[in-house]
Length: 305
Image (cartoon, rainbow, N blue to C red; front, side, top):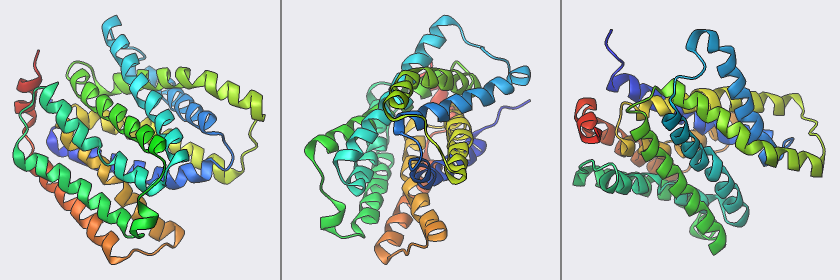
């Protein structure tokens, strides 16, 4: 039976962008009841439970010791360090500034792909990555320069650190997924993430007490666990096993576009022309990058040990 190819991977990474895009609204709702560390722990604990329930059909392990160690390192970068740095940074800077900084992930991945994975990067591919970053800038500047750009230097550096850890995750996962299946990697990644955040969640509960979530917050938690920590990360890792790391990373710039559109339909917000233009630039650049990226067979040869 032929393995799913590029078309399936493009559908997967598109669905991943939609799921993560909706997570902004869900996170905002969930944080009304849960502390950040508790929320992240519960997300991955519930995702781990889903993997355990599926174990009779999917198996439970499937990794050697070396692979398990690499997945642990992967989990340290994301969700481990990434969520901490992002949350700490956003507390100290403007959310709009953070969005632009996070949009540098594809740029970092492009550099890691060229110098670490040793994949040949074409000029037009680099140009499209920077074009998608420009689209995010336009999306953010729609609020006005003074409201869109600023924040503390410390906050901006923390968010930049989060962008870099996510980039290392993307490049490392791309290499790891040449050897292990996306299901196996995502499953163990969830177990590790829950274990990493458990002490911080316990500390938060001891300080602030047990949360008393309303049904709306519980629904948001269920979405973040099943839709993001379980399904979106599985789709992300599947797409990384089939597509260029820089192509997959470019789709992270589609996430704020999805979030902006959902804000229109779910929160009643209105889009201005500059936001529409920025969204169009992001979608067009990512679409062209996907169409022009190398084939799966060509990428496999470049990454072969």
